[in-house]
Image (tube, rainbow, N blue to C red):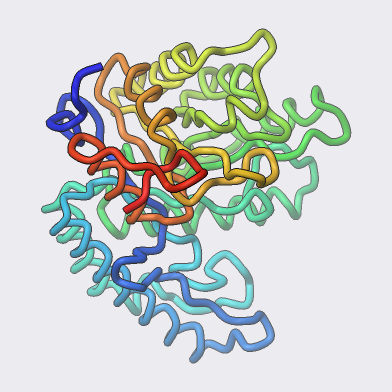
Length: 318
């Protein structure tokens, strides 16, 4: 393989991103509180603090030429919960306008990823589905306020498989059928490492015209049947994005040594990184799901010059 120097984040190759917390700055834009203490005054103060930290992160990303970033779902604490009665999108409209200018000029691709408990597709229970819709409306509103393009998405898992896989899939299809277009155009689905494999999620994405995020670690922990190689996963997942004229996006992670299957390591193993790069057939973005966040990103950037491994882990150290 060619030296990685010179291929990092070029417009014709790939870009790297990280999740929520900027460890270099020590901020995460995700301050929240207990439900019992979620007064309007407290929620407004926390939202103001989070938006201030988000500005710091976006400016940091701009300075470091990082163009892919996932915003923490608690940017507006309890935004999808009835306890939050604030019209925060009006209160902080000027702040969002300012942040949108940073996003626009720096070309950052944004996303959110609520927990499966907060939003998934397969539940038959009306109250669970309504809660998921509220979470999606919140995430879509944040992306709209930041004037993010159509490539900016809220990442969703399919969810559970109760009472049976067949009934859960029917529920997921129905949820997507009934979802308003403005929300459907803001979501992407992802296979997981416990319930739904890539080969099961791909048809769901294709049928409803939503892209699928391919995840290398999930594909290894929960293989499809028949198995999808990494190259096949990348090709098939990428096609769900390009069908919408959007740049593909993938999750990239390494298995934590001695952790449960699917647990993310602190850094990305160079072998996993190189395998994903080798599987690419067109420009794409990698969201690094690594505990060391932006530090893991910077570590991968060093690969072209000084490949180094964390002792005993096979992972890149900063």
